[in-house]
Image 1 (cartoon, rainbow, N blue to C red):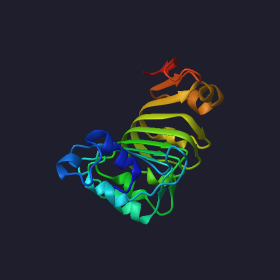
Image 2 (image 1 turned 60 degrees about the vertical axis):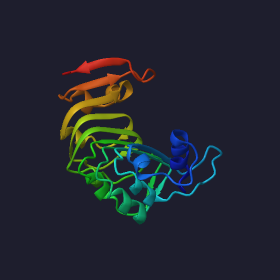
Image 3 (image 1 turned 45 degrees about the horizontal axis):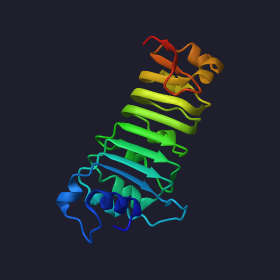
Length: 201
């Protein structure tokens, strides 16, 4: 494998090999791909290698530049259920990725995407971290965690949200949250698992 993150995983599972069998690759359902190695050096990523993992359900991309060739590959991952994006950059329209049939769990951190990518999605879990929300978003989501997002547009509160998770600071600074009637958990700003307040839960 030319993608170092994938090669490291395979080495850990099976030991170094020149080639891996389809049976070995088929059991892998989770991959984490980072564009940088531990020393910070850029390493090559070959998106087409993802297609060798037909059972891939969870994919984490870190600091990846997502251009047309990458988008075409991601759209072929029909079993993908969870996608995490950390400090990634989209170079082309990637809205089709977020409409994959099984994709229900999305984490977006320090990655700018147009709100339209998420429009009309039916999502189990959406976590937005270190990104700004400026546009209207229209979706159905069972679990929405925005406690580390910067919110300028609260219109998404009009969507169907199963459970909204916010920070204590957000709650006290936002009249929109204080007037929100849906299920909501207000979390401690310094202890990520401590619940400060529950509303309609």
